[in-house]
Length: 401
Image 1: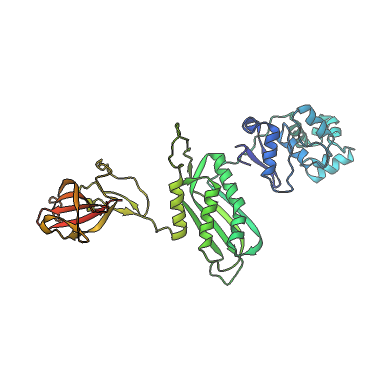
Image 2: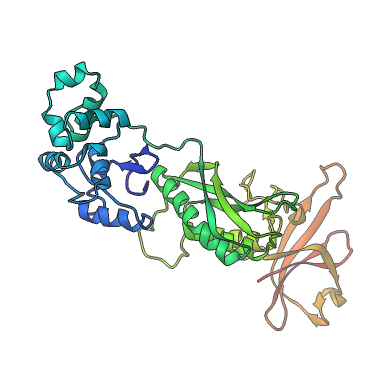
């Protein structure tokens, strides 16, 4: 319900109150909002609408008559017809009202208020005034972040099937995303606990951690990751219940559409690919570049398990001056008559030389002196080769895409 209003309160164990005045225009009016709320409610849920929260609750619990009213005078007529037993008061108070001959709320309102107060029914009068809107509106404790989200459910039947578990998890994930929507938050970590009813197991709980490369709030993204995790996990016993937790939230970074139409991929597609790879191959399957500001090519490469921002600004180079693949170790080339060859075929030098030398100032590292060229073979493939200043010959160092 938090997707319809940020003002949601718990009235009792079986009733929720939604303050919807600020949401009417957004959802197209009260009738459209009621239809949307009913679609998201489980079967058997009844709704009431009134200018007061307690009045709406009493109408929802009434067995007959109109449950949705907008005007205070209409609410008064509807409440007058309800039995006194509809009020949330103690049983001895209801028995006393029946002894006085009060069967309906209209008859109770007709009694002298001073007499009721003298008999110790001041709380009853206050409850009645709150229902009819004749008292100061009750200050509700609106549901807030509260440090995180947690919700659990029981499976209708014990099962170890990934399809059944995914279907049972879908309402929990949808509730989480609605909660994130209400607070304009996102998360990159979910924890789903699968409970087993088997005392032979060392641990009756199987935990599934869903991580995303960037904070998300899309239920489809979380459901797809859960499907991948369940597909490669073997459960030791049937699952009897689920519990979804989310404690790591951060403010949402809104995604905006471009001003001009272009063919660029939608934002988040790369992150979705990374999340899918992690779910299928494990959290340690990916490495991210963390370049070092060095002008010697093989000394700029560094890789980490998590994506990080570069620690220093690297020199701007033309995209065609550096190869897509840099070899871990340069390969020596044959060069009869100073003409480098690959596979017995000579290479044509099409760009260069680009001189790269240095490293003599770094203790423990050999100095470098090279002239780099871009070369092409007869089939059009391009290579990044260099000639060593020390006279050791020609070497292949990289391959262009």
